[in-house]
Image 1 (spheres, helix red, strand yellow):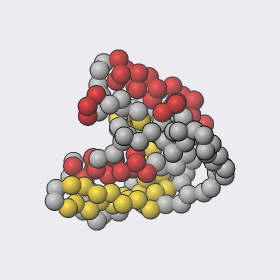
Image 2 (cartoon, rainbow, N blue to C red):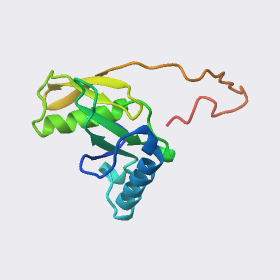
Image 3 (tube, rainbow, N blue to C red):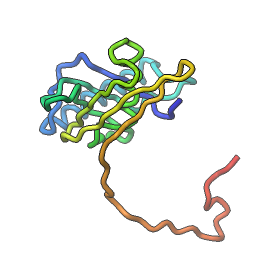
Image 4 (cartoon, rainbow, N blue to C red):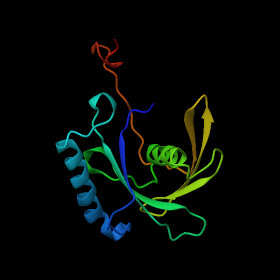
Length: 154
């Protein structure tokens, strides 16, 4: 069970191209606000914090292309590992992929993840393969006088 809640949309009028990123952001933000306004939520009332649009990919051998709105009105430049996992679980539940079958997902910028599922004791376990790049490096400073420097622990 993950900590993010996704709303997956396959039937929409949007063209999933980088040139449309502002329109895609506005469209998915409106969906997110409508879900919240209608009281539609994840388990235990958790907010649906990711909206994922799907469409056909033009890349040979790639099954789908997506746009993922993340919290903070940002979008994911990758095909989104957790979003691809959500998609794989839905595809499996709908009988559209088999256990061990590879599903390829393209992002809004053209990067591709490969995923598959394994099922054990009735639970779906996704596996994702792709590339990642370091985009920042930071130094974490922990003040020894800060009683919460290691986080809040219960």
